[in-house]
Image (cartoon, rainbow, N blue to C red; front, side, top):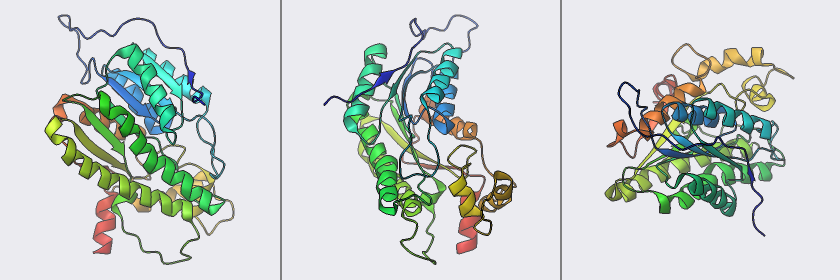
Length: 310
């Protein structure tokens, strides 16, 4: 059965890649970017920021909840807002509801974008979920691995045949990928949380190895590793409970002081826009010789963790 995909309205017109005298040229002017998890959070921020810098967008998001998770995911209304914000910057967007766990749905979404734009220059494999306190435990493990790891592999798999020299692939990792936290208490009792760390570690290694393989083709592959980020993935009940297990029903105000522990800088979390600035750089020609990198945007979180554990 063919995957069911939904296409949102897209702005009419053609991409203008000319540079009339006095007109500002964006850092990714004329490029086309394929972005997963684009309905809200970091994915929306990346789509909007890349559009602001001149890119047209092929966007994908699931837009419905996953049963094992204990927090709500994005909605079609969220995705419509992303479309509106991209169009506000005068760029075109093809947005399709699709599941990164299903390679056929991803390929259909990509094909729709290619039919509109005719090229692909940037891939941002961003879609991800957090399985903290997910139930049933084994379902939370599977859903996180299949989204955060297999979803990245699927995204890159369907896009690789369409990338030429100068293309940029960017995968969203996490500071969790760079940590080696021992299981001190109740091993096997938080499979969704463990799957998150495992999936991000695997993505980091995959990026390293793929970058080496694609370097002779002049295709770059990098990862960005955020720490706590001010999105729905952080601001939800399971996360608050994980940071404040001493309280029965912790609120955001209860949890925010504990978020400070994760960064060396005096902040509880970074903003999605902070990660987007790194994504724009890696997508641009300014990073033409940057590949195989694990780019941390973490407020010094890795430094703090490393200094504490060595």
